[in-house]
Image 1 (cartoon, rainbow over the protein chains, first blue to last red):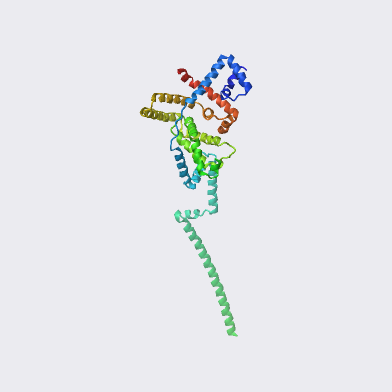
Image 2: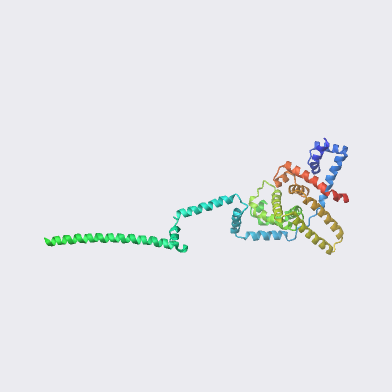
Length: 177
Length: 183
């Protein structure tokens, strides 16, 4: 076992996780190599020194505060959780979703204009206020319907007139008889 | 934990009592003695409470809770921003601690100050390690985890754990060299 191999095993040696054969070989090397022994001691010392990193005891109210946080979050409505997920989906961090969403919005817009038959064009040509567009369009359609009805009624009147004339002709024919 | 999963709320309190000091010690050391460490340790248990359904009994509870702690610490580090600001915050707490010790009427305040100084130097040395090496050192030195448990917590292979530990130890030896020369 050379120095390089031995140094690579120091960490596992300190942890006590080396197998019996490797451990004995390493210890034999350390007995005969002052450099490796010094390095191993130095590693052991610094590892031992970490014991001095003291941690203060946890606060008396720790468990109570945990339970309070749990209770507070349990009583929060589920909506907020859904809202935060929604915000997360639409956040700028989801960069890959932004072009897809933009395309979707454009497609919805195009679909809306195609399906709605672009009624705004007629109103705008007549210089009509945009808030009244729908009403005006409805009025225009009403006018067409009324005109059609009038034509229909006129046709009926004409038909009735023909009938009357026929009747009169028949009556006058009978009177002549 | 299994009792808690089955709806026994009282066993959650027992879990908190059993693990609170270990988890707090981990967050305290990982976050370089930040005053937020206790709050983050509490958040770990809140997360345990609400994630209880995701726990599988095939894993040890201690391993699972350390995975949550590790993630909480990494998130906290991101939120806290640079190490500079954290060191500033820690300096404030150090000052508060010195004032508390000075005014506490302790039998041996100078010894406590010395110990605190030692702790501070070790904390500084550990804080200089990259996060993965720091995690490996803390889990091995203070929580006596096996390589396999560490690999599970750190989501890496056993070989990576050994390598991180080796590099962490070597770096710490250099950082602490000046300190134990004075001794």
